[in-house]
Amino acid sequence: MRKLIVALIIIAVVIAAGGYWHYNRLHPSTDDAYVKAHIVNIASQVSGRANQVLIKNHQQVSQGELLFTLEPKQFKIALQQAEAKLAVEQQSVQSARDNIAADQAIVAQKRAELTLAEQNAKRTLALVAKGQVSIAEGDQVRSQLTVAKAALQAAQESLKQARDQLGPFGDMNAQIRQAQADVDQAKLNLSHTKIYAAAAGILDQVSLRPGDTVTALQSQFALIENNEWWVDANFKETDIGRINVGQSANIVIDMYPGVRFKGKVASMSYGSGASFSLLPPENATGNWVKVTQRFPVKISFTGQLPVSYPLRVGSSATVTVSVSVSVKSQSS
Image (cartoon, rainbow, N blue to C red; front, side):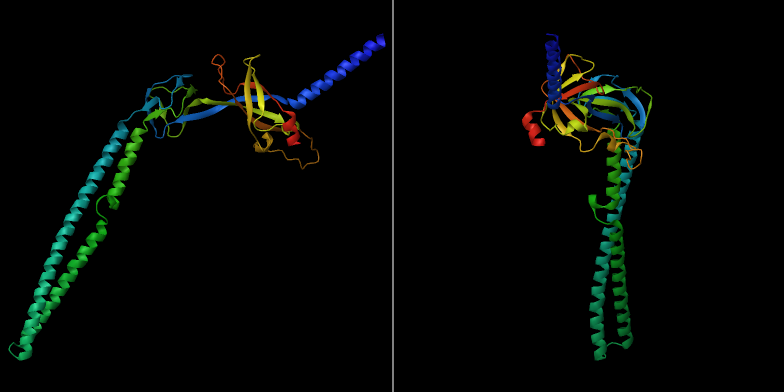
């Protein structure tokens, strides 16, 4: 009887061990997992001094909500200076256009004078040929014709230089375009004195106060987006071969023991976590010790997340993936 009991115990242990092994084969699990969300570093595009701080730490905000402002005075002055420069350039261009119009009138006048000189020379030289006018008078009209041609050429050259210096008219003028670009940049800088939420979420690490110096492109605080949550689970390489995208998963977060969240495999890394470290492992040495590698697997939450269990970035979790026999056979 005693031998029978011992045998039954051994059989029960073997069956339990086999069942445990079989369950683990179909349900790879890891507690090396952490809750993640998109984090936006809120920064100003321009430097300045904080004027109004309209938010506080751990506050929930909506997309497009005004977070804080910078003192706008210096940016308004810069805009006024740029607008004044644009007005000066426009006046300068208008003055140059007036000068061009005057040069055009001079060219027309010199062209008319040349026409008159050509006609006079033609008549006079005809009379010289008939002997009715002296040769000296003929030389004089030739000289006048040469002077008229030179005067027209000089006027045309002056007009050409004025046009080349001015360039295109209106908004295509280079000086006006540069001045207009300065105005646009000044307006953009002024608009950047108001910093808005890039997305809906929860603010964290807020310590900004009115009067603080704000440096351009330097993060002031973080915005944790609350529209997408997932878990980065690091599975052993001995388990990764049985996991595929789309498989369902159970997620248990340490801060909510006993609460199961539903999820699914969203994506899998093609490199181990160690491969992307600052000092990747170098196994070419003689004292190499084999270490089981882990591969990051993204587990996305499915269904509506319960409001009573808010998620927090970085919290630890345990993830168990359900591997069906059919999927296992396809991946083997």
